[in-house]
Image (cartoon, rainbow, N blue to C red; front, side, top):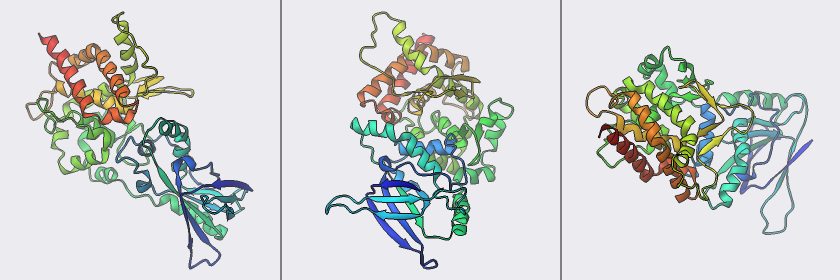
Length: 407
């Protein structure tokens, strides 16, 4: 028997009218208080590397969508247990429960644990230490999750639940759009590229990116909605991919206009993602009078802690370091300056080679500005991706270097 202690912020019991001995306990927990639970009853392995689960992690870390909205957007975790026991506590103390999980070879044989939501649980466990550190540093992050514990159900029914719960997933809007051939021009644009399989157009496909990521990258270059001579910048491409998809489905023309430079955008994305850290170091190497001072670690650079390297499919390379999406998007959006505003089909000012050269020249300064923005916002990576001021500064840097080349 495995015993796990819960300290929920709320708890309630739900009776099943068809099974008099059965009860479902619904606990609301702060994600930092979700304990390790047995995973043996879950019929799926936890593969949190898929884009859909990276999006869940982004929501948990307040890097995607509305702040502290994880509870409202997540269905929670379902588990079965042998017994749920409320602990006697002094009056006024918070409630505490002990959950007793049975052990066995299968659900039919008495095995208890998570029936559904194993990916959600694993993502939470993987991020608890980082969330605690952020909270201790003053970050206003406060996420919650639902935990359903089913007790007293017949074992054959629990086995059925383990299967049916895992199939009740709503079809995503982009999957429906793919079924309706709304992305055919993107398929045709990337056809034959070595990275074509790295982009998924339907959910539950094992790929590094989803079509919603591609649309978000393209939204950064939308000179129709965000003209280069205006003051607005596409911060929403980082903060709300769902809104980008909605905008595309309502009016695909501004995206379709970018088709001639789509593959270049993907290449530029991976180039910035892979080279960003080195460009930051280059800023200080290029002038001996420049000192890094007390900047410390780069919170906006992700490091592969375990064995292996990050894959950059659009340039066919791998590396140990990768810029966080919050740092990539403002830098990528800055190169909107290099898109010709006129004409029905987008093109680059002076060609894509000029874009590459401007990145090489402006990149060190842009990455120094990224670190400055991080420090100004208490090293909150999320703030980098949402800062209109930062987008404007990087956009101006690219414009300055491009104009200097032509002078």
